[in-house]
Image 1 (tube, rainbow, N blue to C red):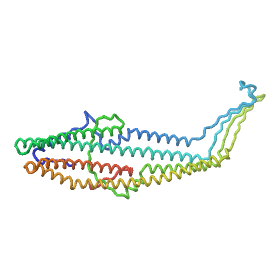
Image 2: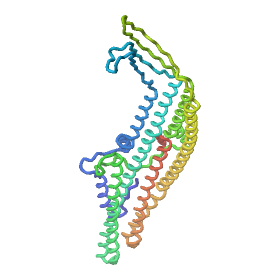
Image 3: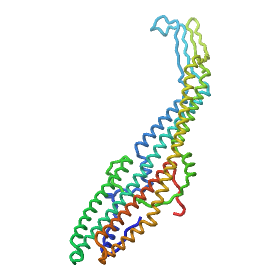
Image 4: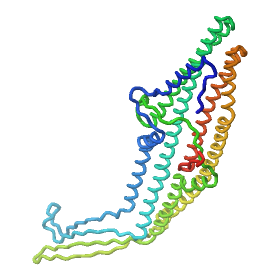
Length: 428
């Protein structure tokens, strides 16, 4: 960030004051200081949306465990030749049998795979995607605080310059060098600068409440940020970025996994055409002159006699759902490509604007301000001309701060689009 340097004697005291104020934290008391990385980590750890997505994933995992569970066994107790309803002890014959339905292993395996793949799809498309979105919001909120902090600095600088010019105008008016109108105009400009400073303080407070909301804590919790808006060049090439996005985006990977889950579900429905086996093991006791115990083993088949309606319907439904998800996957893929290219183009535009400010606009505005200050001291420039040059210098710095913010926002958007960090430029 470029800092204004005094072109004349009436600006130097203000710059020293502004420098000292910049060293004072904006938080109250012993407010915590957060870096950008820490803010992102804390938001991901504490944001309610991430917590809700985590529970959705845990619910899907629980459903996957249910899908792989065996059917419950059935215990049957049978009494025969009972003389009365309340005389079960006088039975003639009693049978205790435990039976278990045994599915075709292939059907059980496909159903288990479908449950696991569905849970993984939820993790990617819901949990990981939510973390990605919340991380982007955290970056944007943090950088907006840095922007508002920079704008507050420029507002203080603007006020200090206006006050210095007012003092100088009063001195020159008393010496008879300028009319009283210059003093009046300078006084009005001090009032306008004061209003801009008040608005800048409010905007900074609002920006901080936004980050506190993401952190799920009281909105007025005091804190300070450790990082400022700086230009950090990154390596950007569209083809590798596109490849990374297609490989790393969790929503695209989630639709791929959901498609696999439906294909496994379709395979399980196909395997359901085969009959299931029922196995029973029981013990029989007969009352009489001679007590007699015996064991019995029973085997049975559950024949899918109505497969043309239930099993065939399940298979057709799974097939249609798989085709639907395949189409959704293609749509997500094109959306990922579009978002990556848009973010890339936005980043290149923001990068060019920052370079233009650094290489041309800021140095020229600074030189013009210095020349105007010296010319006003020598009586070669009117107050309005000095004021216009001053406003140009301040507004140029404000525009540069917005350009830096746009660059950081574009960088964050591209990192979101590819679901990963950008590599730093070695020539930084």
